[in-house]
Each structure stands twice: as C-alpha cells, then as structure tokens.
Image (cartoon, rainbow, N blue to C red):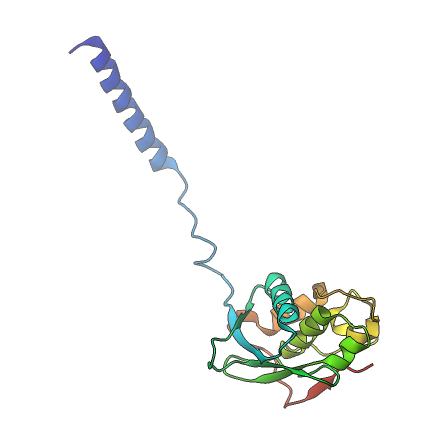
Length: 193
C-alpha cells in the first residue's frame, strides 16, 4: 500500500475511534424546550369587519398583546367564521365586555369615536379595550405607563403596551391553556372619563 494511502486510512480510522469514544462519554442531548414544560397557548379570534376606520389601530393593539404575552395569541378570524372577540366602531365612548374570554366564548369591544374626537389615541384605545377582553379591569386614575388606566392618563398618552403587572395578570389568567378566573357575567366597562 502506498505511503499516502496508508496515512489517509490510518487518519480515517483514528477519527472514527475518536468520534466513537467522544460519543460514548458525551452527556445525553437535552429535550427541546417545547417538548417538556412548554406553556399551552390559547388562541382567540377577533372579528373587526364592523370596525371601519380602526383597522390600523386594531392591528397595532393586537400586535402589542401578541408581543407581550406568550400564552395568548390573538388572530383575525376568517370571513364568516365565529370569533371570540367582536370589535365594532361606534359613535360613543369606547367600551368592552370584561373577560377573560375563553375559546368558544364571546365578548364585544366597541371602539368609540367620541374618545378620538376628544384627542385620545386610537391604538391605545384598541389595546386597552382588548385588555378588557383578556380580563383586565380599569385602573383609573392611573399613569400613562398603565395601559388599563385608559382615558385617565390624558390625551397626550400614546402608550399601547401593557406594563409588567398587566402582562403578568393575563399570563396568570391564561396559565396552562385554561383561564383560571371566572369571566364576569356580561359586565360592560365604559371608558368615559
């Protein structure tokens, strides 16, 4: 056998032996995080087909919740499909049914133009009202940093992001894929000042 072929064969054999020894002594590969201990995600559908003029604000409000809580996912319902969250545009003050809404349940969100006429931010209104659907009550009066302080934060407030306490409450409510709190029986919260 020529010298170069012998070196190549010996090198290959040594590499195989090293790989086998390393594999035998290696720690077992851990399970992927999603296989063990992953939190169940509750998917809730919303229908905004009767909320003309609010589409961008609703999309931004939904995105804010989807980016800030991990065990609830809000998705737009297919046309004609049943949705847990019905979103409509109205001429009055914003209001919503207090949840937490469960899959198969239903709540109503009214995005009122009266608040916009007085200078309140549409995206904050949409995110705030969706927060009610997820089981959060108003925290009035409150600072702008609290999404659920609603109109009490004033017309200069544009914050549409739930704070740590608000996020934690929603995470806890929807823990393990099931809501742990009983929904309020059709109680509607009107967000007038």
